[in-house]
Image (cartoon, rainbow, N blue to C red; front, side, top):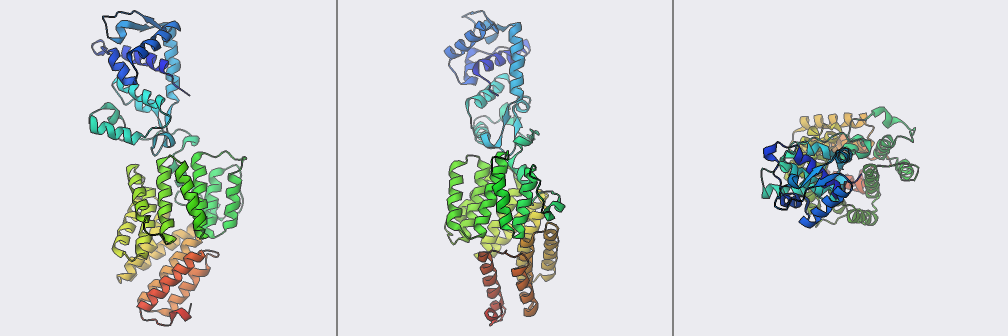
Amino acid sequence: MKLDRESLVLYAINLIEKLPEEKRAHSKDRLTSAMGISDSTLDLYMSRLSSKGFLVRKRLKYKSDVLSNSSITDTGREEVIRVQRTIDGLLLTEERHNIPSCIQVSTILGRINEPLEKIFFLSLYTQNKFFDLPMVLNTFKISKEQTNLLNAFCDMQPNPCGIRNESFVETYFNTSLYGKIDKEMLKSDSWKRDDIDALLVLAKAKQKMGKLEEVKMIHEYLLTSRTDLTQNQWFIIKTDQLQILRKDRKYDELMESLDELLDTIDNKIYVAFLKMLKGQALFMSGERKEYKEYYRSAISSFNSFAMPLFLGITYNNRGVANFIAENYKDAEEDWNKARKFGKEAKSEYLEAKVLPNLADINMMKGNFKLAISQLNKAKKIFMDYSDYDGIANVELNLALLELEKGDLEHALEHFNLSNTISFPLPSPEEKTMYRDGFIKRAMEKGFADIENLI
């Protein structure tokens, strides 16, 4: 649906007419400023409305007041109703306006008192296919702190706009293991081919089980012309494919795909998510000069959009990088933030992803009882989700815990289990990382011949 400029002029005159008489003095200059047009262009639009029978023009040149020079006819009133229906169907979306969820334009207009500010907002909306709403509001904040338009967005709650306009954060939460999902479905091998969201969850679950060929089959099916994907669903598939490339250590292909998506996507939420993945990929591939900036940028964006789930995921991933780089203090800070945001997002799965990492910090401090408690809690959640990859990570951390306690025999048992329980996961890259970390920790504890035992 589209709102043309003539309709916007008619709608503006209608809004002004509804004001109390003492507040009706809106000059043509103010209306042209609100719409971003010249006085002659406004005259042209009003002439066209008059020729269509929507306006009666009085042409009192000594009067600059809009209502002194025009009035709406009965036919015009009917047209105003049609214009209102058009406005009721307009949406601000994350793709077009860099916001976390869709919001109905009519909801915003209902929160703005000044008619010309309503017209300004509608004019901005209709002029631009894409505009960055947070940037616009920030500009207002700098120039005019008390503007109605700025205040209209304070504490704005997104409206349910239907499944086709579901926000990315909602779609991601509902179609990944991070959300409140039907856990019985995770154990199913049957496909409901008409339920795209269920297939996305199933693909994610099979990925965590190491059944990568089945994941690829589901993705291939979803990307055919037989399915009708939303942009959010398409993006989730693309990011899952990126994660599989990382697991397969296909870093050249991974970087090429990441850069291609970053070059073609203008949705800033998507871009932030891709930057997080690129920071992770750069670090894991050994390119460790720029990864911090990618994480920093992603965190800044997710903070701007108040997205605790994605903040938690990003802090957790960056904490892993800091830990591997032996920046233990920074790693602990990142993981504590990740756990906090996990609780804020009400995601037990995100908390389970963070707990083994915090357990590693606690065991290094000698807090064995707390570390065991954290690992047991994480393992239970991973078992509920059939996440064998997560269980393998817990077993690795239990192995490290036994090393800290000086029990090599039990440490080896847990280490061997971590390498087999989620076959074919962990990936070759992760197995090498697990092995190197286990050997390093064992040697620090005085187990000199450890390399010959694993």
